[in-house]
Length: 175
Image 1: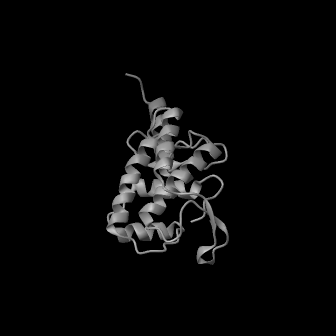
Image 2: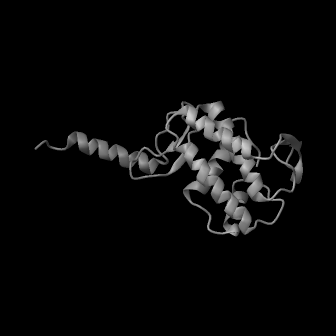
Image 3: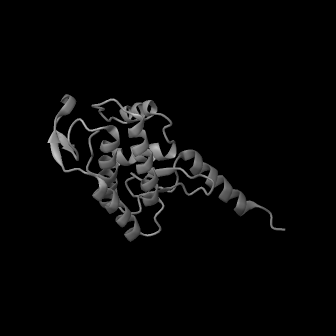
């Protein structure tokens, strides 16, 4: 997976994994491949355990009440990632930046990719652009990649549900 200048791909992968946690190493591998990640080694149950622990910490970034807390949590994950930036052309996909050595296990790869992508997303697009859906009964996490940065809902379905709810509240007869 290439990190774009705003980290959107890595953050979308993190949100997808956090919203629907993989149950097996095979499922984790399939979903990472579907997101564009090149897997250089077999994915193991240890990779799944590392990823689930990472997601537990990453969700705390999403749910942070204020920007300084969010930044501090991102910085903690960045510091824990044993990684440094380097150019690579693995799999013939073109030169791009990696924040890790080649041939690392998937758990290590995600431990660098997700925090770096999150930091790029938040600093490039805005510290408020990672959140949960505004519909109170929906807990879905999403990365706001819209041009204006005003996305409030995880999907059109939730946006429509909330619009109908607001409309009914306005037009309801008063007792």
